[in-house]
Image (cartoon, rainbow, N blue to C red; front, side):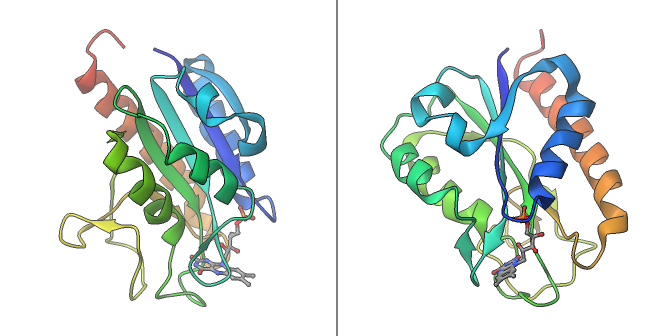
Length: 175
Ligand SMILES: Cc1cc2nc3c(=O)[nH]c(=O)nc-3n(C[C@H](O)[C@H](O)[C@H](O)COP(=O)(O)O)c2cc1C
């Protein structure tokens, strides 16, 4: 199974999270890089792509992502499983909290992409997000909030890494 972590990060928070995730997943991860360095066609060569994307400008994608997401919207993702993680700020941007996951997912879900790593909303104080699913009970991926609760980041990443490995093992028992 080929796995990549690809991130975009303006102040480095999501980049650090990507590195922590990489350290936990170890050699299961073949590539961990900035989104500028992995094209949509490159992503098609992986079974699993973990996307690290923060949210900026009140409900907009972090600046590295838009050209890549446009490219991704034009590919067939039926053989690729995605997971989302990324930083936001639930206090100052409480109604666009981690919108980035939803913005990307809306482009690739219609192209057959599969998703692992949905995450419960319990424990987060926010009013709205484009990244909600399952009757607003879950986020599409793992929200991290280094601006307000950085002390929870490491344990959230560790728990999410365990969860996605479990989900991948269920999808493909040989992994
Ligand atoms: C001008 C500005 C707009 C922001 N807009 C949002 C937003 O809409 N939703 C959100 O969850 N976080 C928002 N944030 C918070 C950032 O996503 C947060 O600081 C994050 O840690 C940045 O991660 P990065 O360094 O990986 O890019 C915003 C921050 C700034 C300064």
